[in-house]
Length: 356
Image (tube, rainbow, N blue to C red; front, top):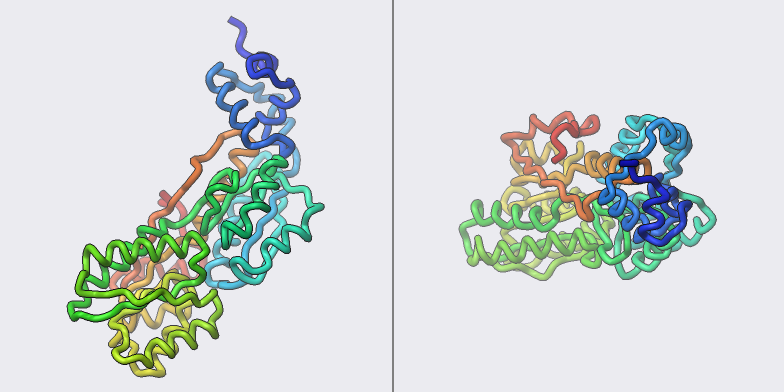
């Protein structure tokens, strides 16, 4: 039998041949819903593209907008490096990366998209803050045919293509279990986060609180402190927290903004007495782990997140492969005993061969 063609797919779906062609070849002027219908029907019919013709069509430029915050650099700089690595490894297409920067999560992102309204992007990577604030902007872009991948956090009902994050709930759960095994006294724990309107931060707190109740009923949780990813705010909040009597037995800093908290602990001469679990790995944090002054840090693998996100986006735009809606990477638990295994991650991008 004659193999199915683009015309056959168009007839079955009742749409134009041009729309099918654009959907199969990752063009930006097709809605995600239509593209998904076309790809599903192509698979059902056993459609196989003309590889010779396809290679000619792919000899073009893809323009990708990268919308990441400036703060916190210890996380978002490796995220950018992962994106660049994926673009450098791509073949058969010229990938133009356009990096756009807003101050911090949920500050300036909506305004930046408004300023970039005239930009023509095939796809976008974004580290989103408050879903209610950024969601309408992402939905409008998706309905114009722009493929969007969220990185580091998510906006689930925004019609984005996919999200790539560390498993935030698991991170919080791990922190709770570690504290349950190291703190036997009855007392309080504190959490210092960024913005609880950011899904990633909210999920870490949810995982932490739920598992603390299971593993350590002798430990109670103080109301979460939102530092808004601002170092000066985090320092003031930590200093105020430690001035209370009794001070907490442990602190879980669920963002990479941990150095101001550690500085407040040092000034109060409580570092080492108050157990600390931090987030991510960067040069300033290493001495605290080496000396045993903090219990652990939970590494979110930002380089791998960025690399994976762009790889999924390019695979979709070039080959029509729809990614899973959510990709969650397992966080790495870094202790003093295994810090040496991760030392190269501080100076250079992490090895992604086991990105999982």
